[in-house]
Length: 234
Ligand code: 3NM
Image (cartoon, rainbow, N blue to C red; front, side):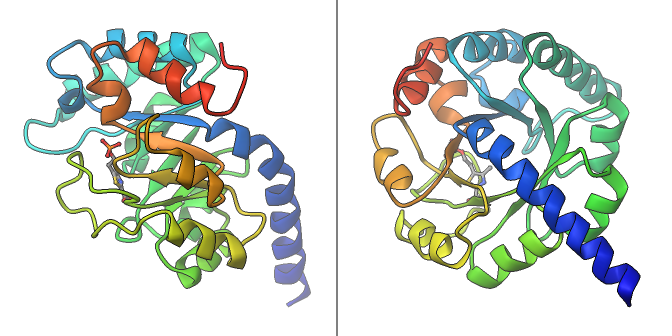
């Protein structure tokens, strides 16, 4: 119908506008839950990481011992407040209810989570919506469903996600970049400041990391080293 076509067209326009804003946010994309910090308070690690140059944060509370119920909500609120105070957008992995409850800036979902099209509808046009994608078809559908960016990985083997697929190497990034020249892409999986250059050369706009920052001796320095890959830094 004409109405559907118009809606699609305006969605396309909104996405194109947001692309210029989204790609820079992906540069130092820090993902963390309470299991990732080697026993240190997540709030402390997040503050240090932000001081080092994190550009986007995702709260991802997963795995054995993951918080639930009121402690989960309490931690999400605490981390959300830290991000708000420093102007770093706050995303929630997978849990849309939690994202809505704490006023998150957006959500990231995998292929096995809630479909992106319905999420865009639920979260509204201003939300940042990320979708994991591993094939050109998944990338195309994510873009059509209103994703602001895709997460592509694992680039290298990762110890942070037990059910991760086999490592794909930076080559998948260049393949997807050919299919989706304008779609912001975050590389993820086993990335560190020392091994991430090929992912950026292959067309990633940014680097999503858990352990490189959350498990680092010095999370501030670790984030700064990632930020320095883009020149300048802070
Ligand atoms: N998603 P680290 S890999 C959360 O391939 C996540 O989609 C992945 O942690 C994917 O930086 C991954 O410690 C874990 O390897 C990333």
